[in-house]
Image (cartoon, rainbow, N blue to C red; front, top):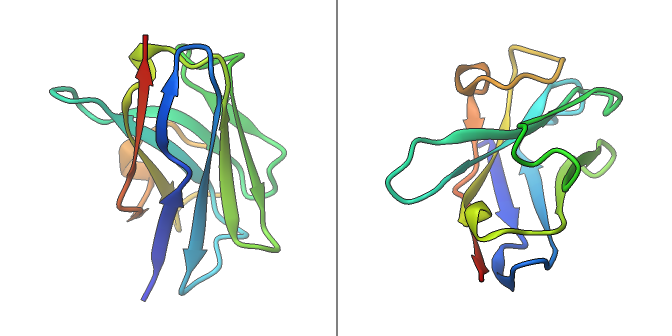
Length: 125
């Protein structure tokens, strides 16, 4: 059974930092694109960041560029999202995703066929 499990969410003050992790089990994603998405209350799930299978190519939503950094450790089958300078607008449930269709970073929801259960990030003002 393939599982993606996020961790590292929590409550932080504006300007603070958090590091999310996504651990994969049941299959390796070392040759697959992976990504982070988020969903705030009352809003649709939106793209945050994506990374190619090698980690050499990344893509970010405009709203997080310069503040968030996506990375991966294929030996550990784990992906990360370093979030700095957090803002109240970043409050959402953050989901990691894996794609068996693509190797390059992809911003589309439908590019990913494996999803984690989500981790809550709350940024207070």
